[in-house]
Length: 309
Image (tube, rainbow, N blue to C red; front, side, top):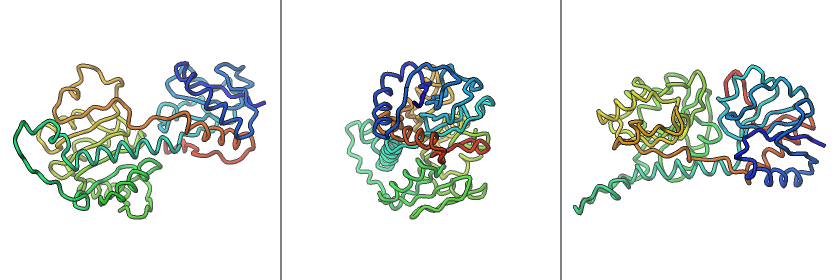
């Protein structure tokens, strides 16, 4: 019997218990999935960082902590966590992010906001350029960023991608390093940020970075709120150097009602919905990692503690 502790929050239990039990059964795993187990008897912890469990020292026999989110910035620095930590990479999460990014890139590329709200009965035939003439840059070329970049290329956009470590993705101009970041920003008519939040990426988008963007660029951030210096973004919006920002993640969530992003005409707020971990598609990923952990095989999507993701 494999004792699996579901430590991802009471509010998620009803949505997750059935898909997990089904995935365990289909994988041939005899699992006792519960919200409460004696800590010393727990084999696997299914986890979300915003829960009461923050001290992992009692879980002396746990073979892995399996995060249900892609982001691990809320747990990776926990010094009591000595067990292997895996982040979530699953098809549903990737598909959702691709749909969000492509939808909003096309929205800004085609000028759909103006068509919906800004015509005022005046015939204004403003024809957008073809996708081939609208340069897109994606910061972050991990599972999500790479998938989004590939999808945008298939739509005809020339895509530049930047990551801290050099990547090689077919059809994408891949850059890395500080010089590469500057080059990537300078061509970004539409900038999409999908970087993980680490000490190296916190505040990476501030006045210096915004200054490298072409005048009138658009920013789309479904990554992490801490990547952006908010006052610098507001300043760039006020001057028009950034024409619009579509933001899905914020330093404080929910975004406070008095936050200036809500009322700024150059900002679109979406409530952290770019992509959600869906139990139906994520449960088989967790089941596979449970199988691997119990068989002493390499765990998928293992977090590099030094890199922070």
